[in-house]
Image (cartoon, rainbow, N blue to C red; front, top):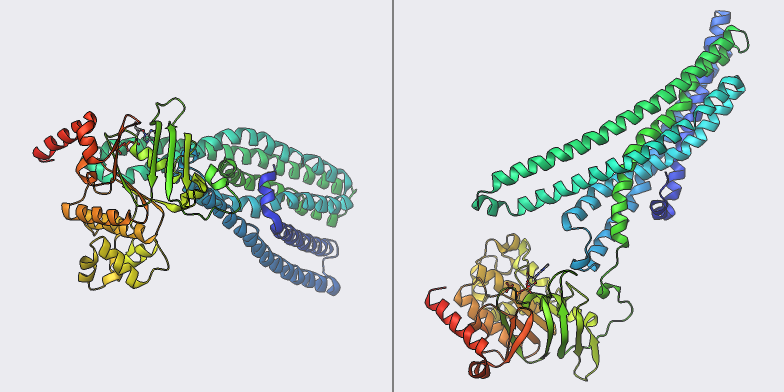
Length: 579
Ligand SMILES: Nc1ncnc2c1ncn2[C@@H]1O[C@H](COP(=O)(O)OP(=O)(O)OP(=O)(O)O)[C@@H](O)[C@H]1O
């Protein structure tokens, strides 16, 4: 019932749990005192037909003190309830965020939507576990013993009967827990799948509309929502049924105790005060246990969500993130790839096959090949998006010291189709590349990508606001800003992956000039579909079906390489056809 892994999270916050239990216990003691004084007053009035002044004073005094205690205890309880889980929720969310940044894309066991749902709604559910369920478990023990001793003092026989009923409730909770696990699993699965599909459809809504697929997707979502509704109803049904079982035990037990107390009064075994107290306190005996039952269901939701979060947090990190200790501060001037092979999944064909190449600072390398030939896969391996290829990827600094790929990764930057411009000013976006850059440096870099005149034309200049992902810019302007931001980052190795594929010729020219200039001080890999964009580059590498099939300068390849000549010819044909 008590999850060890979750409890370990509490650390210093256990004191708040103790605070909640004690405040509840204080309320219970105040209730017992109120019940006692009410019963004594009633009994006196019933037998003597009047209430003595002393009894009146005690009655009013006890009621006032009880109210004060209850009010203080309630305040203290809400204070502790808030603190018992707020730090913990923050910690769990921070841990999830940190983990998501550390784990390789290839090893992410949860996708973005699942992670968001679990760390928002799932973590929210943990509040109930810590601030309600756990304190209630301890309070139940304390309250049952307290009320038992008071009742036993009144009339031992029915008090023992009530005590014997108590284990039935935790036993029924444990039995329900077994069924609940499966139902909760289905509920969370449905919730996550629905969220994921909703997110995907929302992202692709324009595409769905263009292809008139929105109605079809809507029907699909309807079906998914319906099965989630079923799972939710099953969960609610299970919760309701189990509450009925607990009610029967709680109120049944209280009823048995009350009947025995009444018969004790009729037979003269107990006094009127004792009998009245028994009737009023018998319910008090079971109420905490009954509440435990209701809290249990909400807590189970949190436990189920937290299990998925823990599985995620316990999953292995990327080899890159696991590196500890000092990073090698050396700057790579040479990058060597030896016999690198990589497959996205065990049973999949190799996307890269025994690729060997070396890249030097001061050079720009044009990487071309048909779609699916493995160009982007090489980029993903270099940036650490995917890890553990066969073969070796090693860097060397100017003094020939070896730099491992993980040490090198901070020095590698990629600009590709996934690169993003955030809603905010041009300056904000550029400063992401280098937070310390001055306005002058920003203008310089804008000049390098031929964006200076555009920005100068805007009344707000550097403070011109870009909409999310540069919606209010042309494709070429957007791409040039992405490159400007990367240039500001001042890295040793740059990978440009299809950065000119959807831009106008003016932007293409500006980009090519900027990257060629950059190659004087960095290692630059320029991946492209279009051969003419890499013609002038120092070395051209041709990929075909995962293999590096040719390497050389344009002039050399034009003379010797059949593949290159075919490439040139097919591109010429395409250009003549107007593509
Ligand atoms: N995330 C992935 N999971 C599984 N297979 C993938 C993944 N990404 C790429 N592949 C496969 O790996 C192979 C190489 O893909 P890659 O993206 O490296 O090609 P590319 O040369 O960059 O293609 P393009 O020019 O179209 O971008 C292809 O067969 C592709 O289907």
